Image (cartoon, rainbow, N blue to C red; front, side, top):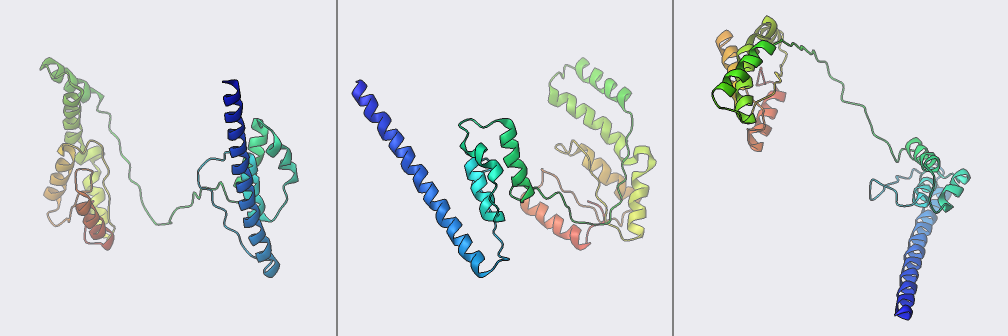
Length: 234
């Protein structure tokens, strides 16, 4: 009935008001703790954390900013009160979140000396021939064609531009570890071809693989050996 709907609506509104008041009280209590802390130590630092990667209401973000920075952000009060804040208002809050480190992604990386040797080869003709043969043999499945392409790449991989084996030997001579990265490792064609070519060129090379085909424990063990210097080529 209309009366039941009205009662239900009133209960929902009352529940929402209770939740909002509870959250407001919690924020107020947290702010009070921070303020008291600053009374004893003006240089106190506050680490602001959000439970989710999104902000449900701009007022939540501004409250967090106030705790972290000890500033008022009066220019953002209008955005907090807006029923449907504009894009500009949202961006204004976001800029402050970034500025004060709440929305911050550290792009720094561990510095290490490295030399990147990247070589490519045009194998279009070989690929087209491999696909033609696969289709002619009735192997129309994508997986079959991928195998054919992998075999072509495997034939070219060990001596791409005539430099892979030479680069590995140069690295070994100066005690540098080397990582050989390649695609299509699932069926092992390319990896085994590269490994065999390196072994033939230098039987003393300590070679290991690190692919998704290896179990986690093997990968961890291989990684530990490589970082320790017990593996020449990964």
